[in-house]
Length: 365
Picture 1 (cartoon, rainbow, N blue to C red):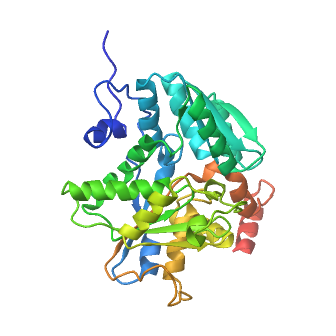
Picture 2 (cartoon, rainbow, N blue to C red):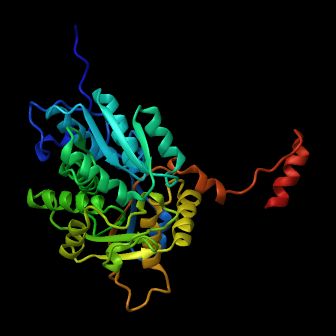
Picture 3 (cartoon, rainbow, N blue to C red):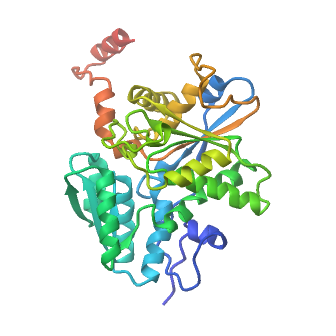
C-alpha cells in the first residue's frame, strides 16, 4: 500500500528549529505559509519610502495564528502518551486545540468564559468535537482552573503556558524573514495573553543567531484600552473590550512579552475599542483584508503611530525613513461576524428591475 505524501506544515518545514525528533508523531493540518501582503494605502500613509506589510494569520486552517503553536503542542502531547488535552480560551485557542486534537484522535476539553465568546469560534469548538464547559468567570479564571486540573490529572495543557506553543508560533517570524530577505524594522502586534509577541521575538532572535537575518526588529505591542495590564503594569480584574480575543487581565506570557519589548527597544501602548473598529473597517474596505476586532489592534496601533495627534510623550518610537513595517493580524473576520454585522451598511431592497436598481445606486452615490 502506498503511503500518502507527508503534509508540509511548519514542523516539516522548520524541523531543525523545533523540539521534535523522529519519534514525534506529527499532527498537522498544513498550517503556516500565510501570506505577507503589501499594503499600498498604509504605506502611503506612512510616507516617504516606508513600506507596510500585513502578515495575515487568519488564513491558517482554523483561521487564526493559534494553529502554529497547536501543531507542536498536540504532536508532543501525543508523543508523551496523552489521551486528552485541555485549554482555557477566549475562542481561537479552543478552535485550534479542538481541531488538532480531532486530527490526533484525542479528547479535547475547553473552558470558556460564559457569554464572552464569539459565536464563530464557539461553533468551531463544537464541530471539531470538543467538550465545552462555560464557567462563571473570565479567561483568567478559566486558565487558573486549567492549571489546577493539569497539575493533578493526566491531561495535557495546551495553552501558551505550554512552551511547545511558543515554539510553533515563532515560525511566523521565520516566514517573514524568508519572504522579505531580512527582518523588518518594526513589527506591530495585538497583545492579549502575550504569547505571540513572545514567540515572534524568539523566532527573530533564533534566525539572527543562525545568521539568517542581519538585524532584529523593534517590537511594538498594542493592548485594548480596557484590557491593558502590561501597559498599566498591573493585573486588570475585570478586563473589558469589544476585542474578545485580547480580553485578558493577567497574561500568561507577561514577563516574556515585557522582555521582548525591552530587549528589542520597543514599546507597549493602548488603543480604544473605537480605534479598533475603525481599523477593522479600514483594512477590510481599503485593502480587502477582513480580520476579527482583536487582530485590528495592530492596525489601530500603526494608525495611532502615524497620526498627527501623536505627542512627544507617546511611548511608541518615531518610525525611521525607509522602514519596513510588518503588522500581524491574528484571526479571520468571520471568527466574530456579529461585531462586523453591527457595523455594516443596510441591505437595499428593490424590485427586480434595472431602472429601479440604477436609481437606487445613483441615489446612494
